[in-house]
Image (cartoon, rainbow, N blue to C red; front, side):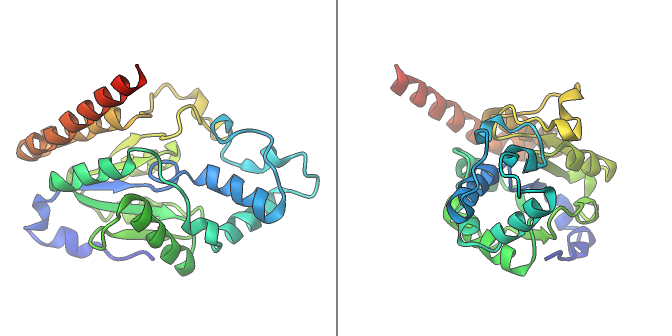
Length: 250
């Protein structure tokens, strides 16, 4: 549910906080893969492509060989999925939990703004995030109706001390219109939505946690050098883990 953030901006102590605001689906959780698996298991509806081959936000075309599936039917399936057990079991992208913990240890105030449904979806989302990325009770989760604009809730954050991360460029644009620095990030590389003209944009998106860490570090350098120094530990740990993984692949 949308919760008022007036108290954040009202106190002088809170003005010192730096806010890191996440979208969930496509950034933290792999919604597309989970939805496709659920549609197959629950309704025997198979997608014609793999999740990483998606090039449209409207998924109806990827189930086009099912003659009964139209856009209205897809919306119904998305709503049903948000109330299903499968919605509670969506997997996180590798590295998401470490990224969140590094930001938390540096002192960033972590939030999520997600347009995934009503109260039932909110409860499932909290359950899923706790299991997948160890989401903490003190990290606010702002849940909006399916497909709703995030601009209203984003406008309640202190614009000069907030960084927003989303995989949909239209949401990034709305954040910037609210005066908030925003990063276009896709945890599943290459999924540019041609029906939203994302493939025509000259702006580059980040697709790795290392690149996203650099964006967060750059943001912190401008508003809180002390916090940026503290966040350096996360960058060094990420480099060490990357080197260790590369060594194992030799």
